[in-house]
Length: 287
Image (cartoon, rainbow, N blue to C red; front, side, top):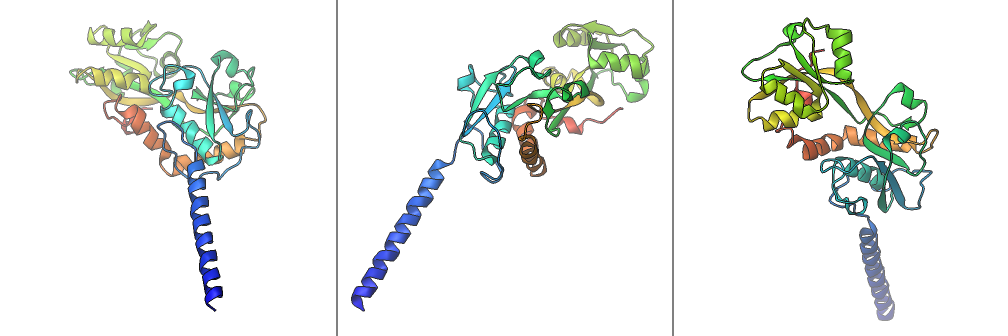
């Protein structure tokens, strides 16, 4: 009986140690993606087709402190878009992310095939959907209506304002097709010129994308205010090769991130500080 008891205790000890070792090994094998902290269940989806085994190859058009933070592609370890990709890679059970630079014009007409997904706040447009596959929308970029704090504006007097817009922009199209202002608007090449004209009182209001407008508002120290937003702009999605089987699992990942607050948390972390703490969704919708 003593021998049997001893053998049983030894066996139980081996099982216990082996289980601990396996648990440690499994924990150690979980990937890390720079400073990102993915949410959701690891390895909960499958991407049927990736360029490199165990790797999510992600296309981007440019490095930026808020989207892809790093001096080179290999040094990127943080940023809104990078962490969005990290969440997809995590759910797909992939071990690492490889970034590749892509040409935007070639990307949206489907002439590139050197990436699994491309994430760079790319608008979903019908003509682009003919050439590439988009995920469900994970975000949007509408138009902010900004003016001097000392000269408040309302949506009721938009028609009588002198606006500043960038030449050839969706905002210029919005004025031409929807507002029909009584005063001829002014066009500029750069946002900084628009806000300089506003502060010089050469124009009454600036129409430009919310993510561009809010940092200028924040830097004005109260001189400029964002009064509202109009839905001129677009929704953004992840770009994939036309006909890829990865579209369904990528959409599943994004749905999880939208429903559990991951996307909103990333927006707050990487954008809201530059926006002066303003949540873009809190701006009144004027049209």
